[in-house]
Length: 176
Image (tube, rainbow, N blue to C red):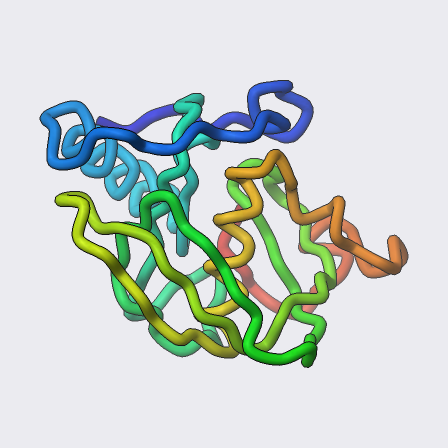
């Protein structure tokens, strides 16, 4: 089922989500299927449960190619529950981000370039991966939602935040 995506300004996006306590349930399977359906229907590269109004620490992400990020390397399709992110160095890099909850806008956001993420899959099996570059950016962006953080809150220079067509007039980016 494709859900409506909450937009910036909705107070539900500012909550700290709750840990998933029960794995491999019908409800969890349905939530994750709905999240992937919603993400794909909107050309998303990731989606957090709070974006569809579900107050749980669940994110999904992954793609082979994406019209919103035409130059991005593929990211493996992942279900990540109760994630913990650990930067592997202090090195950060700025990158342009958009968001389904902040449609039509992009901002230059600093993110850790390389990190380890741990958590659980849908059955409760542990996951541990190293991610870098765009993969690491996607994980950080989605996991921020679990703590009530939207990417504009991380922008350091507000002159690097605006509408897609104003920032990138010569590019045909798919709408956020």
